[in-house]
Length: 289
Image (cartoon, rainbow, N blue to C red; front, side):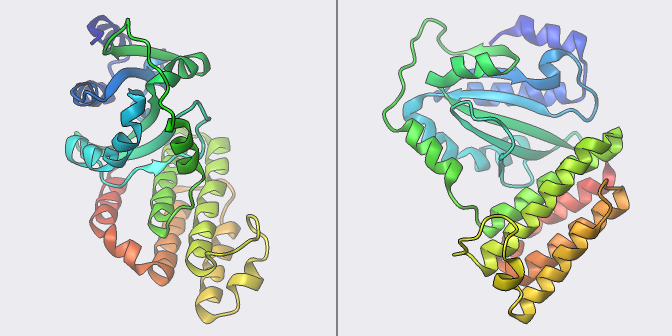
């Protein structure tokens, strides 16, 4: 473990998130599957503030990559206090691995933990595309050969359809991101993330009511969804979402979230029930921020 890097980061940054960074590093380093840990983003650049996320790259042995992905949610929940399953990040660039965003209850606040899981054979590719601070390498002299099926596993995971539960998690995570942008006064980014939020709501409706749709994006929604009372009610909520202020406010974000919960209760009550405790925790922490 690269303790001098920790010391340097702590001296420059001293954010509240540093304790989470250190604890998560120790947790991941205990796994024999983990080969590398790198810090990305504002913590690595020394520009973090109290709202910055903890941005990790986790290198995993190629042969154990799919297994590690399968246990990631319970690991974050039990080890770090994750309140929601991870959102499979659709924004992060493709560097040969998979990105996930977790919301973690830490020291009385909600913290954002961005994890990019990379097969060990792709760590060099990650370092070429992102500013990283390496903090742990299991065997610096080792040569990590790609496993035959790891690239296909990553491609299949990235392209797999998302369930209603996953889409609800996506909306909640993006809602948290918007709240941070509002607090920081980042109107342009809040505007772009509001569109992502609305898209997650639309995708939730389509996944539940038109799972076999062959139409792209926002096409043919009235024709596919609006033929039943439930569908028309959902499209009414979606119309309200896209008619909300383009640059979100705290009040309009609260309204957006309430509409997504309403839609989810209509089309995917099982997903809401499965996430009941997580949603309660999300509401609790969002009121504190």
